[in-house]
Length: 193
Image (tube, rainbow, N blue to C red):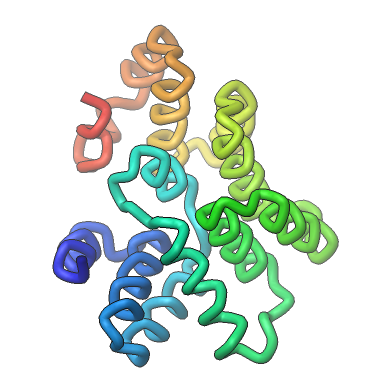
């Protein structure tokens, strides 16, 4: 429901996933102008793994029908999709949400051809491996990302979720001992409790 999505947006206004969900809600309620506004915000922000992990928990529930509607909406209303990695990765995540992993892989491959070492490609690979429940690969990718971005709170949080999903509670406990103090102000960490 739109009201719930607006509340989530007030808590997390910088999440591409939240803006995308608000766009879906506006689209489903018939407010095309607001849907476009929030969808464009989502595209500009790019995808984030946390949204993918939360989709696995169905907290921000995006059903297949909504994902397919937004893909049709994009195709109908945008004559060309910009040839940029963030746009391709956003489409890959939409395809994953719609349950079409093969399309998602195509968008990731197109991104690799544009800018092979773009950081959003790592994000998409993490999402693809999460969709396959290959949590060990997700953990490896996130650990590499954390080494490159040691101050990135989102990566620390995503890694906590990956440990949780992998049922690696020993590693989760160690991770929270090391980084828990910096994550305690983030409402998302409490979902692991």
